[in-house]
Amino acid sequence: MTQQYNTKSAGVRRLMQEAKELRQPTEMYFAQPMEDNLFEWHFTIRGTIGTDFEGGIYHGRIMFPAEYPMKPPNLILLTPNGRFELNKKICLSISGYHPETWLPSWSIRTALLALIGFLPSTPGGALGSLDYPPKERNRLAKLSGDWKCKECGCLMKDVLLPITEDGQSKESEEAKQLAAKLKFQDESAVKKEVAEAAKASSNTEETGPPTGSSDSERETPSEPSQSAQNLTENSASEAEAPVEPQAPAPMPEHFHQPARRIESSTFDYYLLIKIPLALLCIVIFLTLGARRLLVENGNPRNGEPEL
Amino acid sequence: MVNDALENQPTTAGIVTTTEDELILQDQQMKRIEDEQKASPLVGEKMPCATLVALYDQETAPAFFEKANELAKVYSHIRFIRGDGNCFIRAIQVGLVEILLNDKERLVKFIASSKEWTERLVKLGFPDWTCTDFCEFFIEFIEKVRDGVHQREDVFRIFNDDNTANYLLMFFRLITSGYLKEHAAEYEPFLDEGMSLAQYCETEIEAMWKESDHLGIIALVRALNIRIRIEYMDRNAAPNGGTHHNLPDGHDNATFTPDITLLYRPGHYDLIYKAPLAETSKPALPTVA
Image (cartoon, rainbow over all chains, first blue to last red; front, side, top):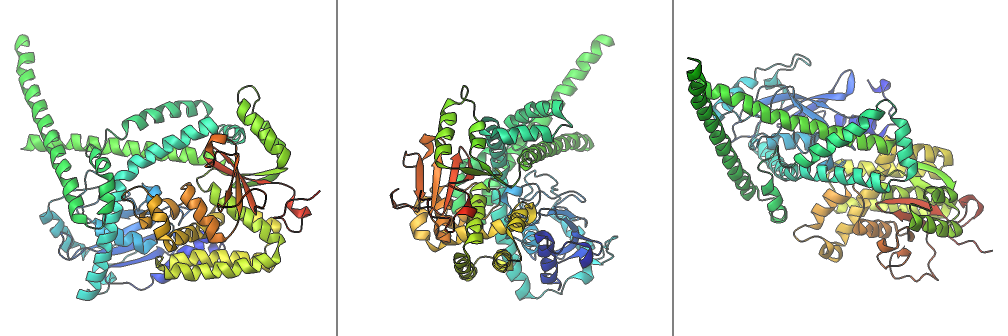
């Protein structure tokens, strides 16, 4: 395996070092590269005691971009868990969807701990999230031990070291802290990214040195007519983006500064996210109810004249 | 009940798909910006300042045209740096290594201080082995420059290889962050209310592709113990209202001989030079006619 990669490449060197660091399974996590691809790994993590995921052992894939560690890895879960959809990139600020908040000094271990800490968090409508009831999550957790990865062949209950009180509490504490920090960034990151992307693109348009812009025009001859279209489409989506998908989003903005101060005390923060979520659910429920009433009222009226 | 469930499903699915579409759009947009950036090299060739003048049209951008001409009288060359959010740090790194290529004595001192920085970062509690890995990677590189394994052309080839160049750049980001953390009491008051220095370092300094603001600039200059001058294309942008700004502060123009000179145009830094480096033994000194 070592021979097929350019070991002078910083990313390859780093991944090999990480593989060495993680060679031994711990109580909470284990990850190693696939035999034929250093840029794809399989990982196994344990659900934290005292959560819906207690007793669960979950398996997944990590896919690294060529720019790793400058850009974050993508995580995908393969074992049914009731919190994340399977075979779909997980939307954490630490995974690929939010490259802005990833730090190159973070590692695979950081990503796995964040994922462990993230399991019990409220989905909040994030992409790829599931909100199964605790009972179902418990059931899936119990079943997960007998889950076997078709690709790498490992059986979940055999992968990790048996848990001891000490080891688990130490690492799950770290996981919890990490997840709390990252989740906070997750909420604001989307808006910030859009704003910054908009700023960056307007910058290049206004002040971009003629060398850059003329070069880039030459560089992308394949879709010259499309690029103009894309521009308008993108700017339209920018305008809508902060409003549409994240109805609870105004909240994090509102509490932006204070939230930073109480970043580590997760309690307040969860409350803050739960309240708008509940409101959102009520609104959706009412809308649906209203729609149904309208449809039911409308049907007979439409039907009568025909009869 | 069954109806309820059925009606619920498409709606929730709908919400998820919009989010997904938007994320994809966002991704595409980021990709487009990135591709645009990548059209220009990370570190350009050294070019005569006339290239800078040629960028501006006398009719449409008279102020910039005039300023470019003024600069061309004082500076002979310019080296364009890719505008990917790392330009200030990259310009400093390239400028410094260029000096070190011609100044063995300074290079040896610099290697010693880089090693010292590794220890300082560990003492400050930087996470994991990953941080020291960035340090070691940079020190290995600079030692190869010392030993002649990396010649001038190798150095510039490496600076233009995204993967390796960014790994080297991370060392400068880390020491910037380290310097700020060592002088937390001094710098924390400059931050927005409610933001701790640790948070600022994590989100603005240690994260890639983040532009350096004044705090990041002064910290890197002090961490490296260098003297720089920033020439402003836009007079209003200079903090002191003049046409250029010397760092660290507190030097008047007469006695100040910068190691590195940068040209600032809104949102971007490039390297500028007074005379070709190769012709002067002590590149920092101004040429005396």
